[in-house]
Length: 237
Ligand SMILES: NC(=O)c1ccc[n+]([C@@H]2O[C@H](COP(=O)([O-])OP(=O)(O)OC[C@H]3O[C@@H](n4cnc5c(N)ncnc54)[C@H](OP(=O)(O)O)[C@@H]3O)[C@@H](O)[C@H]2O)c1
Image (cartoon, rainbow, N blue to C red; front, side, top):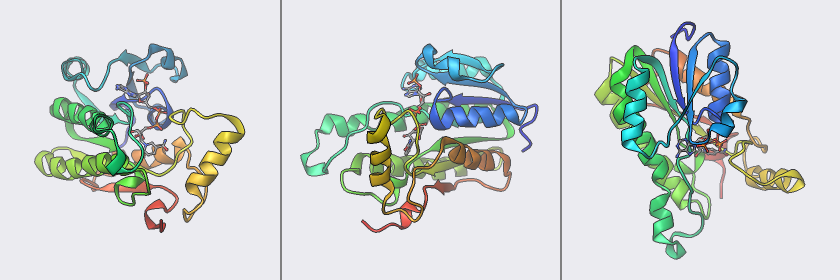
């Protein structure tokens, strides 16, 4: 697909990976609607991009918004959805573990209520995370949710083929506002998190958006996951 002249809807499009994707879609000539909960983040959007406030966890609101903007060619969700629990499973607060699945429920709303409005030949792209297939200590919630996102996409890809495509981009440690730490502590945090990776640095939102654009543009790719993780999935420990 050539995105020029196409319409895109991007959940989580006001920050980080989603925002970088919005920027690439706009640069490619697409018309874009970006969605997040907070209107204050909309000031980061490129000129001409429409903003809609919506919480992906609210199924009725997601369905209404997607219906309002239908039809569209490109549907992306990079919305984090909510908090994620960290730590060993055997010591974990179960409400925290279950709450981590808000990301999956948000993605499920986007796919369930959005797929029918994607024009023939269009695509849906979601974002999982490297712990889905190489879980480090303390990341079981991230791993469980990311794995569920990837499994959901493989299953849904079969249901919607060949009319539209569905794929996942899986990031490793990416330098985005999702990590609130600033200054030297931020530099150290990313250095520690990526030290064992084949490419020992944090990735950029643009590197992730590049992969999302590949998944959007390549009409022969569906039901798959593209890793943008500096070799995280091959690391030991
Ligand atoms: N950064 C990383 O290292 C990393 C690693 C692995 C996976 N990921 C995944 O990559 C995706 C993007 O992360 P990011 O780093 O780009 O995060 P980010 O910079 O914090 O951006 C998150 C975006 O999602 C929106 N959002 C969050 N919760 C939402 C909700 N309930 N409803 C609607 N919009 C919501 C945010 O806007 P509002 O807050 O205004 O709603 C914002 O636009 C997420 O799925 C994350 O789990 C990131």
